[in-house]
Length: 478
Image (cartoon, rainbow, N blue to C red):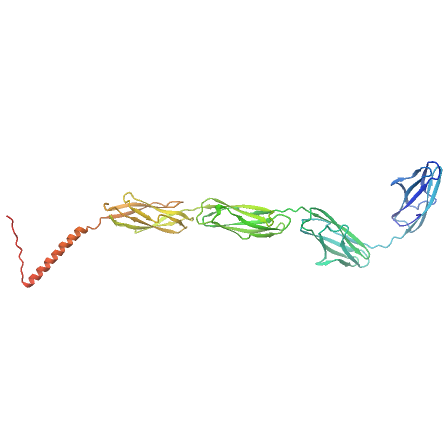
């Protein structure tokens, strides 16, 4: 086609076919003259995408060329003609071409841009892009906003907001700028990688696009348990508390179940958690409290408490080891005996009440009373022992002492000592006063003599009253 229409600052191309009518191989030189190109215009000949100034053609052969004309920016609108010459040794040819330069149409502009074109997130999260739409037209324009070429990935969704209102289109006054927030929701099953899409705004007078990119990072999931004071010491029977921080170090929300790992050495302990189920957002931490109360009877040593945290899907797990050292404060003493000065007859028995007290801060177990005497062997203590004695509590033992009937009267010492599985009291000495039994035989004879004398006196008084005299004659033996 020998005629083309174009605008200034553009290019036009002509497809040319050159035929060699001679019976000889010929080389033809290519040129534009008579008339030539306007000032500032440029032309290039291409043969099979190679720039050429001449071309060789076989006899009676044909060659296809492309002529590209570059029109400068300052070209004045109008019609321009120029002639293309192909001059060879055996033949020559020419063709006149025309280019009409038209005035460019009036165009309006709209500017769409985002200060943050590339954002990164994790699967299941959302990202927000700020878009600014500036209407450079002298007229108000209505814009349709959408995502296309490329569109959003499958199962991804996007929402356009102006303020807090969702929009599909908007109207912008001349020279004004509208702020649009685009919220992109990334599904939880999105694979790691870079995802590109393009936002378009189509107006009545101008259009614009803005490319955006979201990088989906590999989901890092991790939870952790932390206690600032993992080791504490307490006395038996006391309570202890541990603050525990539960943290979601991953990029998605996690539901964490907390529990105490049971063990044989913690049987009888009362261990509780203030919370057993937590929902944590990414990078969120929450504090809980573990409270433990030991049994009254517990061995003095260091105990381990294991706290386990697991996500509901069982994928993540974290454990925390806490230690509780049980300290003991044992003090057992004999605080009293009744009677204070015990006395007993030989062959008789006496009960002595001995009171013992746990003056320490720990429970005493297997409390018993030991009584020793080198003289009095018959000693019985009841009860044999007391299973447990609480701190500051008292207990009583009954000591039955039975001296031998032949034991010489006197004061005899016995030693008593309270003892438990954990400690012993000091030794206390009690003096037992043993006396002779009452002589009932001689007492009965004395009573009989006294009774006889009283009878005689009574008879004499009666006889004297009635004038009767009694004579007692003394007989002699020869």
